[in-house]
Image 1 (cartoon, rainbow, N blue to C red):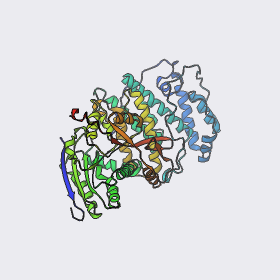
Image 2: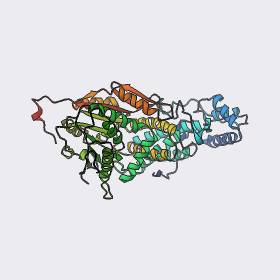
Image 3: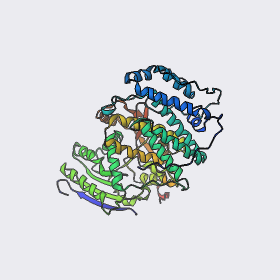
Image 4: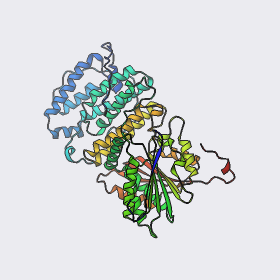
Length: 530
């Protein structure tokens, strides 16, 4: 469906989950004196003919831990000597010894094997600084056995991703079976168990749909997508940080202007704009005329949802005596929007607001170049850009997978620390769709092409924009926002005039402000724009 628009004016004082799909292939038979290839891929050296005895050891350990008191298990987690976990039999024996049990007869495991597949040391498999847990999880104890299973889970995920990159889908399918078994042995409510389940699901989709050149996700209705977006907004401070930081910068850019026009690249219920309307109402000297153009997807049920949002904002503006006009532009993709649809007046001070949208223009054909070109032609006072602080636009699948696993593990750590059901579950579904798109989609179907702040700096500078320093007010607003969340661990940092919000030492989203650098007058007439 092509773009269309709806307009509203309000003078001041007047009314106006998918389930994972897995292969059922059987594992190939191996000679008894060779290493089990699946356990080797996960990081464990066990001969095929020793599997039965090692399994008995693990079963014996689980029985011993069930019979032990929580205090004994807690002490084991603090005091046990962790031998080389690749020597599986000896490691289990050490834990059994700590629990004062009699282990079965020793199984000889060779130690002269080559190094295993390397794994990035900075992957956040579980939080190094776990936040205090509340409610039903306050008494949870992570046992050494569960910790070991978590490490194995990450190793097998990486081995499966490497198999997918090589095109070895038979091995990848076998590893999916193993991953499903491992997921049954870890806590799937939070931590690596939760994140791992989403990555296993994404890998499964990619393998099952490998015959398609670019896997297409199950489409959500506009209402379902907005509902997940709203719960993600409520569950954690990332979108609130984006909105508050952008509003403060826009408010400062509009200082002294009598007619202002905000162009929002993703209206999504208009959650960002009540705060700006109220701030403009309190502006010394009186509020300006505010025009808001909201871009969003067309409603499949025939409703004019953009107009409905505009009516609510118009009523709010009327109640605080702000002259207000709204225009909705419905478009399935941002690249379908043309500048003439926005009806920008030369007398207006323009602000362009992009909250986690520009990365969707980095796919085949690079429509980002055309969009930045016409944004520049609008001569905006400010362009707000908020993006995920990660590099998920790498062409090498394994690199992209590794970065995504690290990034979203940190994201889920932060989510676990500050929310409760049911908001948390729906927010997790919102993030799961991002993970699925990064991992299982290619070509034009892959739209979650996040890039780092440094890359955006280069791209926007080359497109004719100059950075605007986000001032101390924006920084203070962001810090005040974090006080609304009881969980410690969130941090706001200044980065060369930009702001980042992260969890502990890892930045997760970045906000930057820009303005168009005027073209030399001698060349203005030579530029043709599509």
